[in-house]
Amino acid sequence: MTRLIERWLNTAAAVAILLLCLLIVANVFGRQFLHRGIPDVIILVRELMVPAILFPLASATSSRAHVAIDVIAQHFPAALNRWIAVLAILFGLLVATVLLWAGWEELVRTWKSGAHYSGDFQLPKWPSRLMFVLAIGLFELRLLQLLWVDLKAAVTGVPAPSQI
Image (tube, rainbow, N blue to C red; front, top):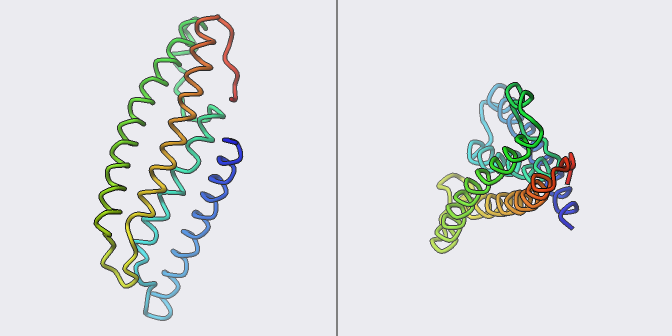
């Protein structure tokens, strides 16, 4: 089930990137040749950055595709590296939990207040807050799953799988 959700989120992220490109090109074209840009383009671009950046996080986590610096770690024994991976996941969970909590608080606040942007379209603020909470929530679930797998690998001494 999580793979299906991640596939959908990756597709949504790709669509968001495509829309970002189209919006920016259309805005530049409009300003250059029509002397008129797209209304609220800055708000639209800012809101599309949320899914473009955050939606692939869970998928990248399950593939262990995050940026890592192995220059020093390659000199450590494999057992120590497995425990370092567990500590890194615990730190990631701490950060993700703080982000999830703050995102949830902001989502509730914007939902209750009915806050919106003051541009031409009067776009509501809550959709991007909801996307943030969903993306970070799924990311945190993947981190928990990765913690379980890596903790088991560290305790048993068996190398962790490259993808979960």
